[in-house]
Structure formats: structure tokens, C-alpha cells
Image 1 (cartoon, rainbow, N blue to C red):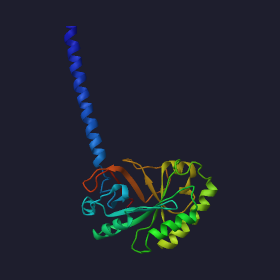
Image 2 (tube, helix red, strand yellow):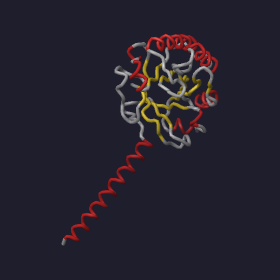
Image 3 (tube, one colour):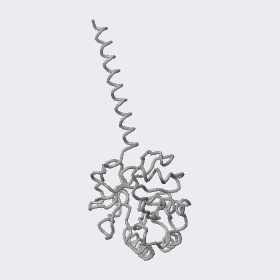
Image 4 (cartoon, rainbow, N blue to C red):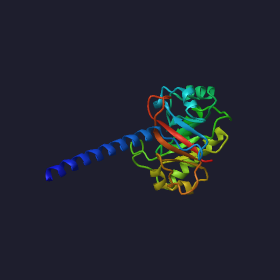
Length: 231
């Protein structure tokens, strides 16, 4: 009798484990293909850089990308090799395009602005430029204090916005905002990032949200960063 009970318990545990594994598999698959509900976020797009290549822009648009933001420049000297071709290809598919600069907290603002303005054409049809603000211990092991950061960033934004002809969007990481509290300090639209769940770390309304950094589609060989716009 005891042996029969043990056998039944083992079978029950095996069945439970199978159910759990199936649930995990379905959850993993859903996370790879999930996009925000169009009923809540009707305008969506992608943030693309050279690491996503090759991108099939026709398929990307067909999968629901109304716009793309393309990384153009990083710090004072690096330029994204895919920016110019991506700009032309995305526009050919009828998508709006914006340019992204990845800001280096330790590099001079003037040099970073020069890198951006020589990479991105002066074009009124471009979306507002976006600035990635994150703490990177590799490129900037000794991050500046709040006052120094705000001074340099203001210089950079003034030059970027003069070139673009419109205010920039600040793409704030959770770690950066936790350290510098910039959302409350600088009057610019905010772009936040968090997979699957709407983040609240900016503590004020945002206009753009990187809702997932692991979207799998047939538009690119690897995962894409998918972005929703606040209606």
C-alpha cells in the first residue's frame, strides 16, 4: 500500500513538473514575441543600431513599426556605421526616423555635440533627437557629480537642439535616474526603459517607453528593442 502511494506521488510530481515546464516555455515564448497592446499604445516602433543588422525594413514596417530611432553617434568619436543607410531604407518604407546619441558622462560636451551634428543631417523631417543617459563603468569609471553633469549636458543639448531645430528626448536608465534625478531637473520629454512592465522610476509622465529589448521577429536576426509612444 505504501509503495502504491509513493508511486502515485511520483507520478503526480512528474505531471506537475511537466505542467511547470510547459508554463515556463510558453512564458519564454510570449516574452520573445510580446508587444504592448495597440489599443493602449497605437503608435509603436523600434530602436535600431548596427548590431541589429541586417534589418529587413519592409518586414519591420509590416510587423508594426510606425517609426524607427537609429543610433547615430556615441561619445566624442564613435559613429554608427548603419545610420546613413538605415535612414534612407526606413524612409523608403514610409517610416518616420529619429537619431540617437549615446552620451558619455566622462567626455567633453562640445566634442560629443560635434560628433552628433557631423553625423546627423540637418533635416526638419527627422523626429526629435534622443540622448541615451546611462552609467557605464567601463567608459566612465569616475562618473561626474550632479552639478558637473548638468552643466556639460546642458551645453551638449543646446548644441544638439540648435542643429536639430527641436528639443531632445532624454532616454534615462533606471540607474542613471536613481543617481542624478535628472527627470525633475531638466525640462525635456522622457524616454524610459523596462521590459514588459511600465516603469515608474522617472516619477513623472514619459512620452516613450522601450517596452522590450528582446522582441524576436523575422525582420532581423537577433532581438530588437521595441518602443511604445504614450498616446
